[in-house]
Length: 455
Ligand code: PHE
Picture (tube, protein in one colour):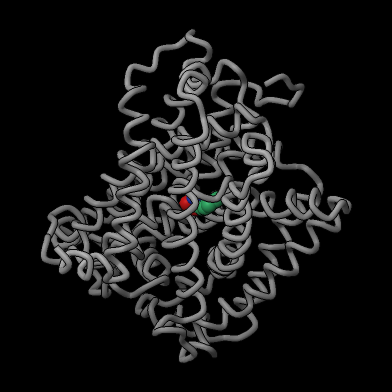
């Protein structure tokens, strides 16, 4: 389609921007938390299978939609299937982005608290601190976590409104590799702790008796969440791709980098978890109560800790920017308002929801919906339902509405690059992805068992 849309500057720029959106708290905070609450290595195995067999095809499909239609999440469906209800996939994505941002900002706020605590010398003040109790004291405080949530949303708001995201992108070219390096140092320290083998066994030796329907659904949700799939974020990003971008190669690269970061996070966390006698199923705070123990074991604890939490906050910021942008762009276009006003509407809305997520770690801990706290319920709804549903419908959309010739032309850049796995990709996108996601849903709802009984 003809257009004069701006495009990303370079191949590396494309890769880094997409990696910036994908790599964030999802791999470093959420992955260990999910693995720990889902019994360990069996989760890892299913997660990696989902990344390869569902994540990559869905990502290629989103890239196709974005670059071919050259518009945003809702706009792309309106352009490719005018007058139909397919654009609801886009609305689902925008709502998911808004909801995810509301609790993602809370966890991002925690990273700032840890930056602050390291700076003020509180975190490693005395040698025998129980970091679990330390975290509890912070999380059950009403105002401090909310203050940091507001601060983080403010930071994101500022970037989205003032358009300095190019600067952030440039900065993250240095910061991302640095974060990678620190992860490696932490892994080395963690695996050389006493009793660390138990952690490695937990992480890598699958116990298939742990493989329940909810573990499978969690792995599916984690794959979608950590690759930023199913909510149109990558559709918007790929609308800025150049004509020569090799989209299937980019999808592989992003997925591999993301998986490596998640694995490093696992190797950094679990040996330490077992070495310090922390419960792997501690929940959302797992990373925050484990890492200070490891930093404490390094020379210059404060320095490592400070740099790590700053980099983690930066990695979170590149993700919150993209989440905020998805909602802001929608409000902007739909309600014909200014960028500033649109961003304010999103920031205030996200903050109000964020307050409830934050309180659900303290004051509102006992308030549950179906056994889940407010934070857990939002996380469940978005990562485990809305994103996989979005991905599933996106595949069905392209599988049924788009001419395969056009698809091939676009994915091979008009025949100039090879895509040897094209027919396998189409098979996975058309059949494997929608059916597999459908089965996971039915399984979790217990409907699969009922259906089986009929035969
Ligand atoms: N993938 C991001 C992470 O892992 C989170 C995210 C999800 C960002 C969806 C954008 C869209 O942290």
